[in-house]
Image (cartoon, rainbow, N blue to C red):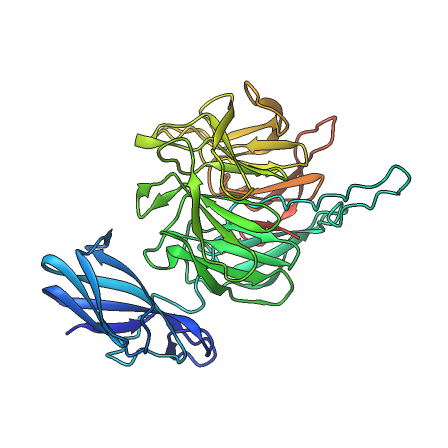
Length: 440
């Protein structure tokens, strides 16, 4: 018989619920059609005409022939032939609970998961325009980033922090994210509110979620706050001072060119803001100036490595994406991106071949104008090819993650100031690798 199962679990007592708190919230449910039929009748009893529906057949996202609302408590999903599958849907309701055939599903767990990926450079607040006699007021964010924060969502459940100021120390744990082992999460940082955002992930339902966690200890799990326009993994996350962006990546294995924008202010759900120039791209790196986001490297259609560096404006309405330059080679799949106030940096990576060799190079490019090629300015201590994470202050970048097992937890830093120096080993994470990087 068809079943309607809940998407969340109450962390306090282990019971299954539909939303993490009561009140007028969006309620998410999964309807399972176990007997083949060309008309699925879904009874949710939520007294709502406001619905959002995704249909999956054989684990693939498909479009139904029609969706008809019967009344405020039920609707039909119509196909041209009899099929089985499941439908994920959202309603806006005033009470918790779907009142039909609730089937607990431990694998779809608790506070919606989190992704954070490569950490981003928070955008400085512009200094006000002053008269010649006035004394300039420093930007509130200058030299204000004190800590790097790494979130573990797949290999471990942990949030760890370490200082950017000397003397550097090893990382310490400040809590956990409780995401149930979801991978390929990416992340951005809202430093104004002290909040980390975890975006997407490799999971048919939770991969559409936007989640948050506080930078202040103790961290007791991540909170579901919004939904992307589709499942995203292998994506890039850019950010301005007020918005986060989920760029390209893959939707359940199908590469995408979409740019989703979501605000740091509520409501947080994403909306399509445009597309990158290449028809699809995954595993790229990101950089951010105060006005534009940059997407560099990665691999494009049919798995070929890309050398393109494209930019898009943070302004609204969204304007065209433009190509601003090229990388030195195709060795920048799964590379790391960080940003100073004037330059973007592309670090490590590989060329996405069966014999791919992890890289150590650190290259840079200017935000101010188009460029021919990036410039190599130094090297990491260790080769790092994929699943690499980063954090940064205004003057220092910190890199950690995939490398030989004995050094995968090593934190390396390098300065943005000239003259440039190679990276330095400054401390260790409690675990190897990591999934998302943040700065606060």
